[in-house]
Amino acid sequence: MIIQIDNVLVSAEILTEDFCCDLSKCKGKCCIEGDAGAPITLEEISLLEDNLEAIKNDLSIEAQLIIASQGVAYTDKDGDLVTSIVNGKDCVFTCYEDVILNGPDTSNHIENNDNIVKNCCLCAYERAYRKKLINWPKPISCALYPIRESKLSNGMIALVYHRWEVCKDAIIKGKELSLPLYKFLKEPLIRRFGPEWYEALCTAAKELTTQ
Image (tube, rainbow, N blue to C red; front, side):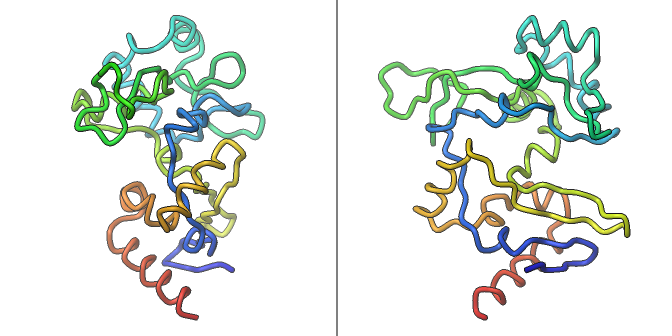
């Protein structure tokens, strides 16, 4: 079933399926699995480049060398612009850190804390954004995942729920919390389409669940 809101076609699964990232289980694996980088726009390439100095030292030497030789992005086999990757899979903008879940500052390191998740893979841009070092978080395709966006030949936009094995624990946690995917991704959906569009999405979800 497809729901249309303005020029956006939304798969009903986005409104009905539960989902909540469980960093304690996946440790950010979605940033280092797969065979291509994250989809990005030309505008986002400029933002990646403009904010690169703020996060450069958080990246691996190998990632820095790839960015120096190839740039922050490349065109994949499907002709899409995507972030550069290391060893054929890892996004160049990943960094690793021990993270305190549900803590006031996820950059802290506290020994013998049950809420610590060791060696998590994080996006260096989002990490810098949360520390208020830059004013741009990360590419919208990353923020929206597991929602995938595509542009149709008629100019409309399609949003679908992309299922991936690495997110199996997010499905379990989402069901435990009874948290629909569209609510879990409220912030990035508003960032991408605006608050009025999101309100219309919520209305559509309520109508769908009462049918």
